[in-house]
Image (cartoon, rainbow, N blue to C red):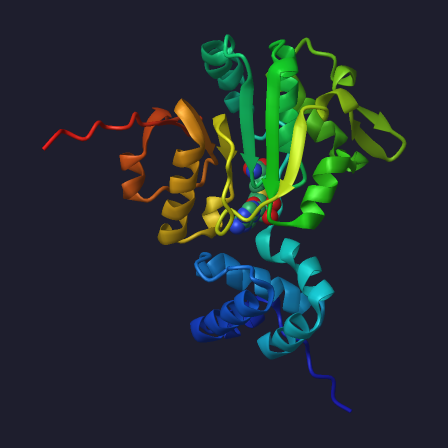
Length: 290
Ligand SMILES: C[S@@+](CC[C@H](N)C(=O)[O-])C[C@H]1O[C@@H](n2cnc3c(N)ncnc32)[C@H](O)[C@@H]1O
């Protein structure tokens, strides 16, 4: 019998039409209550093509029936749909700016409240915990870490990473903190990098969907880096409004290098530092009496 060559990733991705994508996301929303309908089309198609080729499902139809029949399968797929890429001290200059400027401005607050929105596997949380410890502020830090993916959150809570990342993490740590002792914060144990428990104690983890869930706490700093890249303009504004309502007056929003904000963000935030993509909450404009 003639062997039919399997389709390439690009072929699978190009076969997915916008209509098919829309009906799949609508069906997922109805079945599981998770709303991907306003995610950016290209990245969602890439995620779906990844799943079809990883599980050898042939086409979107194969993925469709497996996803809607098998809840556990769908939950295990969320990571492939979302892309959880992260790392310790991602963009070292940001952490220097946070230490030398942002934390200096808020160090006298009675507490320092930080939200890592879309924390993925946790490297960003522990990087900030190192910066706070280095600034002698960790004892008054109240950190909230959230993500849509339960699998990523489980890894974040464990704070254990593969040994192969050691050199990379060590070199990023040194760029931020040339004289620091890494073992005060994380160490290599056998095949794994383990984050010290001291960096976990002020962190509360919570599964949270930025698109659908509320947040009742207030924060001095919100990190939402490399998450909104998957959202369209409508969704970005929805999430920016959520951040606005959760920030203390003068609070900071830190986004990723490749995050593009819709023009309307200017009503809510002013650019604080362009190089590090830090924004500041705009003061509420008093309404003039009629
Ligand atoms: C690329 S990672 C970013 C991790 C980290 N912030 C960083 O920049 O290193 C994107 C994360 O956003 C999460 N995410 C995507 N959509 C989300 C949503 N609607 N609510 C919460 N998290 C979401 C994904 O699960 C993923 O862990």
